[in-house]
Length: 265
Image 1 (cartoon, rainbow, N blue to C red):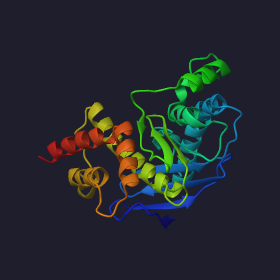
Image 2 (cartoon, one colour):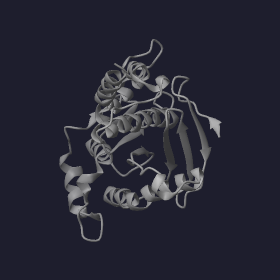
Image 3 (cartoon, rainbow, N blue to C red):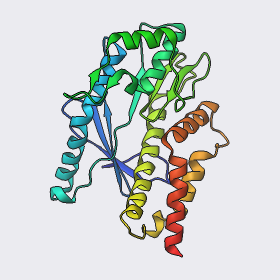
Image 4 (tube, rainbow, N blue to C red):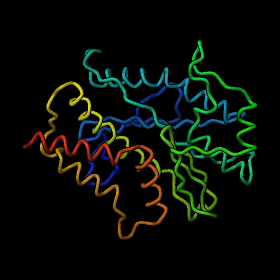
């Protein structure tokens, strides 16, 4: 495996692995004990609803695939391999039939695709029907958990609990896909780390981590993710703020930090 570029404070290594449908799949293993798969998949759906249904149906195969891949790589018994926590989508929109307000609404829908899908259908996630998408595109769509981090004339961008959607309008001035991916990988790694601390608490254990990944590590992580850097662009700040808010990571970092500090005392 080779070192990954997530900053010296969050050490990690990465390696390419095979995935049955992805154009590219990279496994990032963080020294704090978290593994994150980054899958790159290109789609040209006929409608947003089609993409939303694919996204939810892919859960049924990607989550067990990730578990099986980790089992093979670790050469462990199935019972000893942890279950994958979550699938988060980052949509990089390169083209679409919308313009004006409809384009903005399309990005909002991408960040919250559940409104286009019947997830309780007997045979698995099913489309709600083209009329729903058409109506939302015509009248607009908003959600209290969606946060915009686009810049007028540069990009249209939204973050939600289910994912992030980004459309660049100026290649020279907009964020790059690598910048978005690096931010998401960092946030997801720390989300899973704090989830492990939470799981220990819920299992009735006193949470414990090696000293180098104890409460001081989480305090430093929180500062790095919530404080603007001197030479950081406004777009980077807006991106981090939006993703941090919609993921709930800031609150999780504080809770895990407090729990680990109490454990030391």
